[in-house]
Amino acid sequence: ISAEQIDEAALSSRVALADLPPPDLFIRTGGDTRISNFLLWQLAYTELWFTETLWPEFDAAVLQQALDDFAQRERRFGLTSAQIAAKAAETTHA
Image (spheres, rainbow, N blue to C red):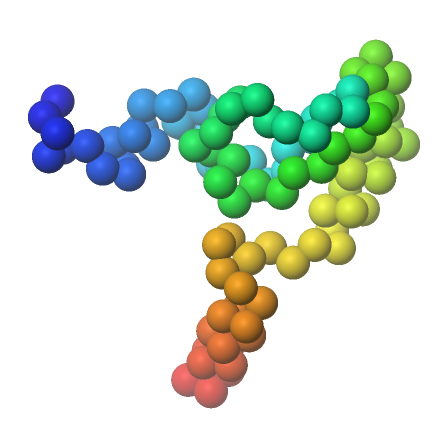
């Protein structure tokens, strides 16, 4: 592959989980508030959720907490809230 052939699509097709859509939610257990470069390319617009709960104690109740928190978030995919509002206004008036 030449340098000219390297672009976002080329990189995306060669990373772990390339055949899957990007994750919506990343849950890190054990109290660490870092991703340790895990799935770095795929997590660009993923919502991160950290818990002190250790993996062996991670249960349905903790998962529900993560999902409830995720449901309250504004997914912006790299945009600001103002940019999202402007896009919404454009589509309503178009």
